[in-house]
Length: 293
Image (cartoon, rainbow, N blue to C red; front, side):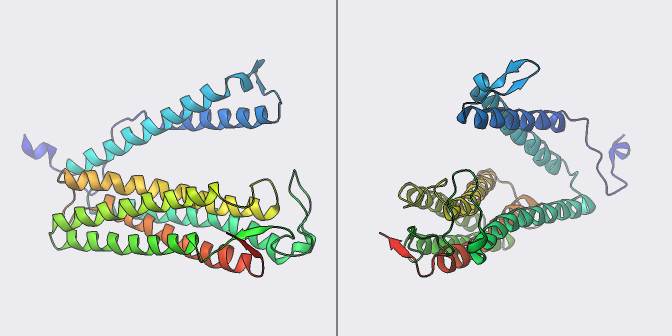
């Protein structure tokens, strides 16, 4: 009987799962609620099938968010369970690596779009057009009259934090490879703490920023690029926190730890993106402007 359950191939056919359909539904509700929310901000209605969804924008967005988060938890829990059951064979693990590489590549192109918007406005300020409530740049960059954030104050502090976090994460990873679980847990704990610190510093910076999102093209490109990076830091911190909890629970071995590797790849990607943001948006993009203190 035991031989009938023995794997004689490297592939794993998963059981029928509701998570793809529920995940799509959650994302759709989030998008629908988000559109209704933005229409309501402009005092516009948003009718679908004769119903004005602008009146229920918060509920639609909240239901979609909760459903999406639950699907993420349940789906990844199933993936971890499959790994414990031995379904993550050599070929399956290889394909998971390819999937993570493609995901990071798509994230890279996502940030290319925001850098493109920034360089388009900063390299050709005289050609900037007035859209929505954004101002003309006045033919210079940063736009005339805008005080910018000192890149060698909080941004430099956050740069040091992220570089340190990459170091502590590598420490934890190498500790695992050498069979040192205490070192793994310590490295992950410090990395998560540094991620939380980065987010706190960026939130403080945003609260005290001398310009707003809608006040100028400079503010719009700045907040979109750095804000989405901050969101990725938050996601990466949660990713590493889950890895920390799994490590405390006894998961990961020197031979089987793709979940940790995927989190490390993602975190190092976030580190590299921040270095480009710091150099080009904070330092080069504010060159010659008046710093706000």
